[in-house]
Image (cartoon, rainbow, N blue to C red; front, side, top):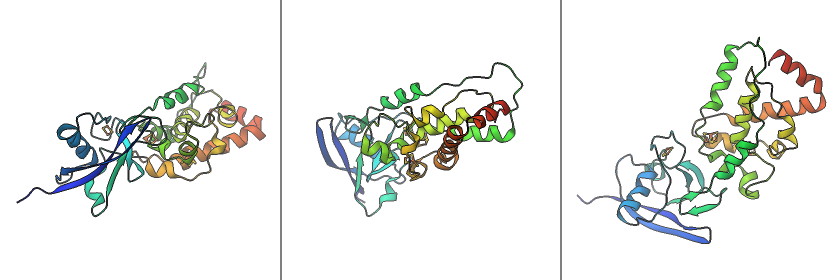
Length: 245
Ligand code: SF4
Ligand code: F3S
Ligand code: FES
């Protein structure tokens, strides 16, 4: 029996430009796109650049695009594309370094710009069970930045200087929800680098999140409401902080 092969087109290039190159790789039952890419790197083109680490959807380093959709390459099965052409490309919201590897450092700059966790100086504060539950969801984030990649605000305005992006709205919401936190982030969200007003709730971020974090409903919408509440009713913010909720 002859070995079946699958054709994948991989973007090869750098900041100067590039193109898709076709490769035929042996088809293995259940293989993921990263397997095919690593086969090319091992047997056909050793200089192919790809970032990966865990191969188990935990580390968040293998983010790219398959047929234009943001995906973890290690979690995307080749047989999901049966009968279709497969095109693997780097995340387009970030500057390309080489082939499938982009420079995601902009995200870490955003992370540093967020007003940090500020614990209440003295107890009592009450930790309710539902607060703990709500805190868990954003903590599942593996920082793959697929949500950042898909968001049109970042895609079309590349490195938007005044938009933190969905991953960081989830982060901010986890800080804001923390019963011990006394930080104040509504100015950051409205007038600072947060720029939450640019989000028009397309929900694309929630759709691509491999950790199924409901970024839009559980983080962005509550934060937008909080911004409106705090801006038009500052006493509300104070009460919320005093009550620890
Ligand atoms: Fe990735 Fe989801 Fe975290 Fe965004 S929120 S960086 S899509 S794990
Ligand atoms: Fe972008 Fe998500 Fe809002 S994709 S526009 S941050 S709902
Ligand atoms: Fe770690 Fe894909 S290699 S998430």
